Length: 184
Image (cartoon, rainbow, N blue to C red):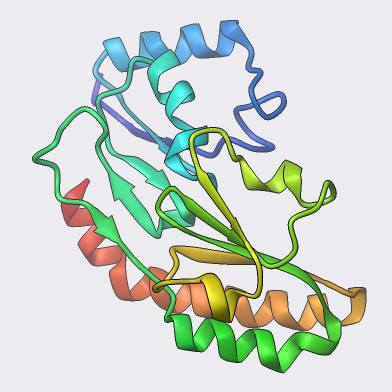
């Protein structure tokens, strides 16, 4: 049989919850991999909260994190890392523009987490195990360009911002899709 490239998301797709999965499904995916099919994980999660899934599947392929902003191969140090960033200046400009509707925001630079207002409501989104958490005004604590950002907004503005962010993500995707396909 000709091998297939099988790319899987985690949350809402492969995972039953944050850290639980169906062993029968994972056993089948391991069989597919052993049969020569290429299994790749693609997730919005950082590596620190997706690597255990990668290990459970015994993968040796690239791991796609931050919705494609970071692509690396955890078991191949020679694999070329793709590390896309959002400009710190642009992120801070967006924050100032939406500040009246902003409830909270966080972003990450690889394993460092920067959150504007750390509280129990935002904790489940942060995947803090293995990360270093920084809290405060992002303009004061963010040292560089992040891999991405997640905004929590009052309802009406969130629809507009989601559409703007989708456009930005699509632009990044199409600009780097050819490069990604060459790497995989």
